[in-house]
Image 1 (cartoon, rainbow, N blue to C red):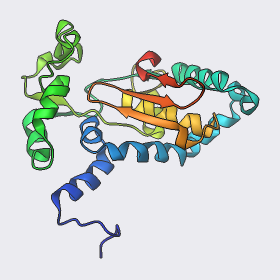
Image 2: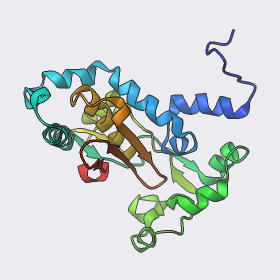
Image 3: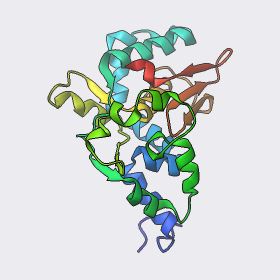
Length: 221
């Protein structure tokens, strides 16, 4: 019996999408951007996020204006989560393995032109800083890339129990999803006003409020 109605698991793309929904690496979110919003919904369903409403930091926030609510949430995330791209948590994969996995239903030339770890040749900044050395990949051969996991709020909170971590942690997609979720749960912003912007290099949020509000998780670090 198919546990997911209307899911055709004989189709490789469908199978990969449902597999990706479970593991949810950065690469998988790029291949299947429709999985980004379910990550937000997973956070919204988490009691860990709803407990933020009881924090004294957010006392009376529902009576505040939008800018105050947005900045309060951002400051709370800054204080409680760090930007983290370590290699030891989620492990490594290879370019060839990812290419073989997705090449039958995705244009891998597009990946190479847009993703720094696949030979991105756009913004020269990523070559000026030596992107592989920056991520600690210089100790491996050039085919090795990180399997960065996109985390729910529970996984982000769990980092505080790791050695050398004093707070929660997450990479940009995780922080972006957390911010969007918090803007709904704590900031009382309707979901239809929150847009998720994901690229192979970074993730951001755009909120339709006043002239528009852009939040970039990299500024959380």
